[in-house]
Length: 349
Length: 111
Image (tube, rainbow over all chains, first blue to last red):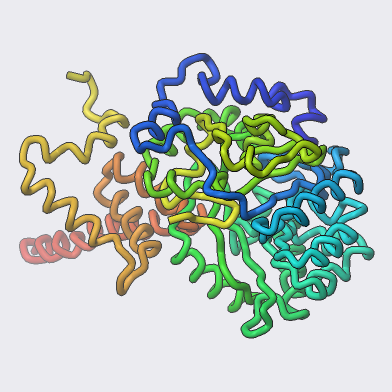
């Protein structure tokens, strides 16, 4: 399977995606505008609460081609953050003590040739590092076999997608063979202490719905995951994060081609949760693209909606400007406010 | 008025049945939501039971609702179909067991 971009799919165009989201595929969208919902709660314009998390997309290259990927990542994507741009990130992190957490994402972050150097430099700045590891990268090539040990050495928090604790659902979403490789990778992470009591090595898993529906309750699903993974594979982990699929890129393509788009959007709107609206992650996170541009969140990044303030690139970044900006919202934001809420750290309420 | 007995859009209006009798409607929905909470049985297990019962009572609204709910709660297609077979087996068995009554009656009157 190729990325939408490699296929020449019209949905690879961020502007087209925004148009579909705002007006529906046939200009037939009757959904309440997200802005209107936020206005009724006194949350418009949506303002930051202060930057704490610096999320860096170090490249769109990935060894997997997941059906729901909002990044449209894959082996054919060549966009990779350079060491120079990473240095700009380090300068920003160094100059801003409020940025306590650096969240590395991709693609598969480990495929960036400067990944390990970047981690070492961030650690020198004494920041907490999260790495969004797709698990299978650990087994993709001999040179990655030592990743669990590398993560342990730098005390990196690992967050990994495992859409379900059964092979069928996982492989349907992430590709054939992904479940078995993910299980092996999780066992390797457990072997160095990840997910184990008292090691302090955090291993969190992510659940994404494998279809056009919302995630179930995070706490009860976590219990099921823990029981099933321990019983069948002897695997331990810390927390399960349930994340709602965003109607962006490949998941948007899936919704449109399966004729689930309208129903899914209706579902998101019906499940709008005011408490989740107040706690959306874009209020304390800044998202950095592979080329150094700044976004309110990873989703706005994929829709090419740059931050609405003077400096929209790392080289021009001013924290005061960012902290006083208006966050750009759109119909896709319903994905973060539905049900128990959704963020890169799971449910928000 | 519609010209069909079942309209999928009507499921969305279920919550409005209190419009004609609020007190009983409120009591029903309060009780309903309690029934489906995690308790001695998990909400997940209850969802699969609800799916089977939906087929037994042949309620199209319930089948739509609990097909989605059971799948969302992680039951696989084969597990869901087995639950439907359980409902069908009970319905089939319920008819067939009356065959004993038929046999009894025939034996009573036959020479």
